[in-house]
Length: 610
Image (cartoon, rainbow, N blue to C red):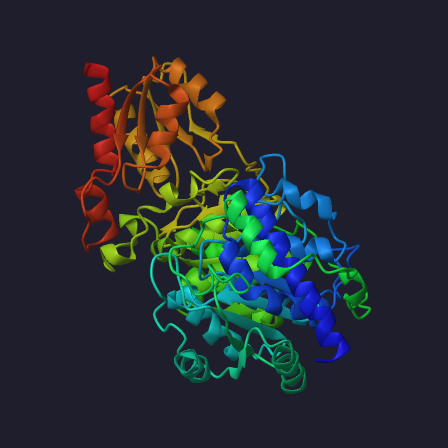
């Protein structure tokens, strides 16, 4: 064994000891999965990767994603050994006051994405590697996966994308320790099975013993020469280094009791005396990346009816001209979401995810982590496939703008599989997520500008049909606002709505005016946060009577938001889609499923009769 290999062996031993000690002190955690990857982690952090321990944002840093997030203790141990955090802080693992959480989150600034919902890390790595290439950085991205999570389809969406984008700076390491949480993994120690899969997607594959320091270093050396996307398939033993844990089922997620820890440490031996931080390799010098970050442009002078999805595409392309942090990702529907306008103008900042929505969101998380502003668009119905990735994007503190088009029954003949009817319920519960639902082209453009300037997860809901232009160019649409678009003294009922049904409400108001019955109409374009003050005031002025109408299922949408805001202070009628819809013409469907002007007028009259 060379001097270098001996040093890395000592560092791996330190990582094992830290992982065991931390989890026992915390009384919870996953020590056995840490033990299997200790040799890989030692070679990765103290021989292969380059990073500036004083600056997590250095563009020269290699990036690391721990996709198997339950191995967080060894990640914290590696950062401590590297000198990024004090060694004595490791004892704070899983404490409510600590950033060293049970699974990694960006509360610890070196973590670029929250992991632990398995199967997502490689997609994040694709986004990070793309960002490095766009910035002209020579740095690379490393993703360490568990073997169990390779059963997730999202892993293979990412593997496919990495080859498509030619990411020679992306390296995956699979810790193949054979055991999952409850049973052996699908392929156990059949390394050839993993090899066939990665090779089928076009990856360079390197098979090795994950406990042989020399073999690990040799594999990294070959990757450096040959490039990527490359994967190290490392055969390891779960619980490596402790005889009563090694390759034993039933130990997943179980810390050692104090007496068991004492036995384990006796087997491993004393903590080796070595300054691991001296082995950290500094990054290559990379000039600081400077962006244009404008948020204003000459607004479009709309006059003819225009679909809000079309306005989204026009506005996004204009935003791209003043802000080069903006990138677009699309799920093979860019000619329907109209993101194709951005793609045509900025091909170097446009990424086709094809029909792989989970990977689309994972890529967006990685791009956001490097300071880009991803706009990810597809049909709203298809975003439901990526709900878990969207949830994890929030836990990653990502700055991603989602656009869901083709919402509601108003899309028409394509039928229910294409209708986004659950999307508000998907995004509204996410803490801090902004949800805007504009009704015309002018408000869409203004809403997109608002979301571009908002830091955090946000969602823009756009419709398929062309709608009339209701607002004047330049009118502001702040987050948390609303517009009272029809109002006069003596109004009897307030209609609260958004999107296409704003125009149905206005039609209903016109019809009822002929009967001397006034409807007040509020465009609640900001569904989350809701303009509770305006809505409460206007409803109070109309005798506490309100109709909420939306092209969405009952649960989780505008109706529930309004009901919560008014908290029993009004008589409410909620018009929404209450049955499974079907194909038909937009007007037919809105009538058939109870959200047309005639239904609004009827609901208003019934409130007055009660």
